[in-house]
Length: 93
Length: 365
Ligand SMILES: C[S@@+](CC[C@H](N)C(=O)[O-])C[C@H]1O[C@@H](n2cnc3c(N)ncnc32)[C@H](O)[C@@H]1O
Ligand code: SF4
Ligand code: SF4
Image (cartoon, rainbow over all chains, first blue to last red; front, side, top):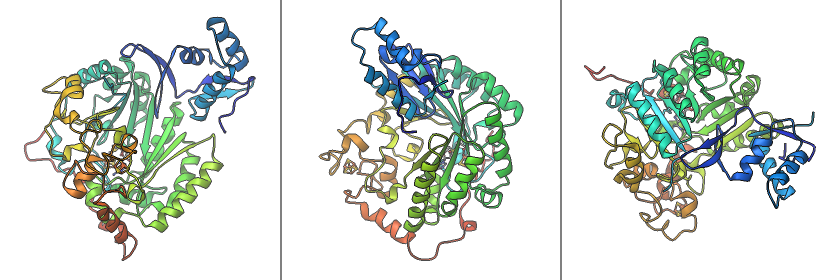
């Protein structure tokens, strides 16, 4: 697995990872065995939309409804990074 | 203010095993006055307020603490990611189910080798079969499984079989950590340090297996720093991302730092936030101001932070020197000599290793 993802993939958070709100830092964070990732609002929105039912294309569409200036490659790259870390899983079904 | 992300809670130094590489202190009985359940719960709450998101429950053997389930439940309710680091001994089906219900997120089980004879010899007690049973139980309950293996002269040549065992147990990750020389490992260093030939072979096997199992099992290989050019960025920098609380409530920037001649800081006397932000202990090696040459003018000073303070102290007697592992350190010859000795001469048999022993002081609880 090279961490490549395509627009038709349906990503979801791996069982070992968890998205939480940190009231201390006032930030969303992703928790997993090997570490912690601080997310900005868009990052948290992306992770929140990765529920295994939406394709990446649909996630990008949904983000565009919420935010201006959503760059598709950036979203894809962000998800690919998490897949490479095994914090995110992808399926096509 | 920098906030810590992770806390290592060493709940107890009691342990049924006797690993000669154990990083725990030599004077184990000095730490028998353990924090109570209520004290740990207060420390966890203070840790969460300080920013800690990941709690590693370790020891000694954390399962020796009867209140482990309660402690996990408390940390989970505070919103922390909880990780149990265990030998596997004491992880009965009942205990495991209770921990699962309490919200434990992740389990790491250590094994000493791929087969009972060597594993039990290194552990100093029959334990291999129970570890394997515990590992299966972790998978059966739906936890992700990480196996921890400390590598040294006596097991590193079996790395291929260790990886096969991990694969057959369907481990999600395996951490192959070359021994770090603190505590009992420091005492046994001359015997434990592997040769260059052993390491080269192990590393080529790791590369091949990593490729074969890509996407199925993650293989983390912690390099032996005695054989590296540069030191490890110990704990991601002194008082920068992590803190450790040891059984008696002392707080440390790293679990080995109890050996350093620095003022103590205890949760029994101060708040965790004061200790983190202001105690002389945590201020001592924070940032780059304390650094001597060659670190002070080196561009890697914010990458590796001058290496490990405990290693500098153990090897030179001065915690404020450049980690002698670094090839730029004026003390590097000390490491080079140890490595030289490990590569010639006759290695001792594993039976000559000094096992970790916990001798209770008379009158201690
Ligand atoms: C000190 S142990 C305590 C938890 C439990 N008793 C166990 O051994 O899994 C914590 C972790 O550190 C590892 N460890 C112990 N001594 C070490 C050393 N000298 N260098 C590197 N890792 C070490 C163990 O394998 C274990 O994964
Ligand atoms: S490393 Fe071995 S001796 Fe040390 S605490 Fe863990 S199981 Fe016990
Ligand atoms: S001189 Fe110091 S900062 Fe530079 S690489 Fe060596 S240990 Fe790191």
